[in-house]
Image (cartoon, rainbow, N blue to C red):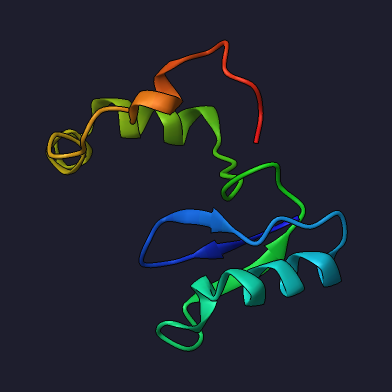
Length: 88
C-alpha cells in the first residue's frame, strides 16, 4: 500500500496494510506539507493504475496535444533506468 503525493507525483508511505501506509506517510512527514497533499493509501505497488480502452490509447498516441505535453518531461532518473536494480 502507498499514498500518492499529488505535487511530487510519487508514492509515499509504504505499508503492508492501509493502516501501515498511513502511519508510514505520517512518519515520512511527506503528506503534511502542504496538509492534505496526499491521496490514498492505494493497494498499488507504486503509483496510480490507469486503465484505458484501446480506442482511447490510439487517440492518445495520435494526439498532438499529448505529444506537446509529454515533450518537456525529463527522462528516467538514474536509479529508474536500471532494470536490474533491487526493489525498494
